[in-house]
Length: 267
Image (tube, rainbow, N blue to C red; front, side, top):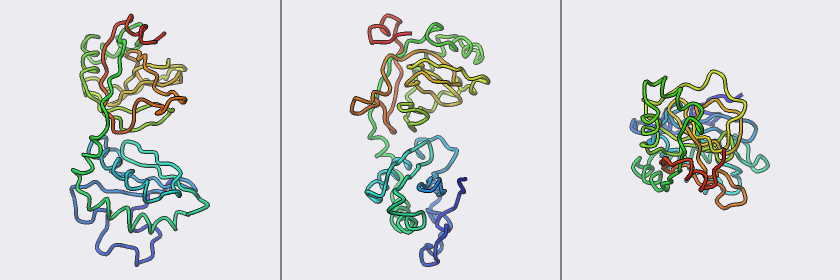
């Protein structure tokens, strides 16, 4: 069970609690609050304004990852950033939750607290811009027509809205190469399908809520399908294995079925 424990009051002796601070950022209301949770025997979950999908929060996630990697060094086994959180997995042979807390309290948290938000945004803006071709059609996107009907739009309007937006990569998860992109225009926001498909094809471009993504491999899924992308989203023998990374900006470019095939795509 993961129990949320506000910092800096988690199992800390009095000398480690910053005087006069009830939250990580003390009296600075412009920065999002951070909370820590124990996530299993060898991991913490660092929450940065949970439930919020916003570039400001993503910038702080990115910046905290930049701080954590050199701070934890060889103790760190993995960092998994998400929309508003970071899973911090450490080597249990070198540290425990209790032994890592002073390090996080005394070094990570003060550094994050005094860093101007603009600096965090600049780090986030260092991501690259990636254009992904998409063959939008009722043949390649099984839900294109139903999404258009549900939103009182034409299929061409759905395509225009989806491809006319620049999306930020907020997290990589669910499956290798599955990048969570946001935010989808409100006019296209759709709840997930009530009945997930047993198999969604690799390359499927899909939407759910205010998110969009490209399925890297065939898998079950409950998102609404708009088209197909011919670009592989995960190739383990390549370096890097994924064309997208957290912090990147993504734009979808409509292409024809013929162009889809020429780029290596197949139904």
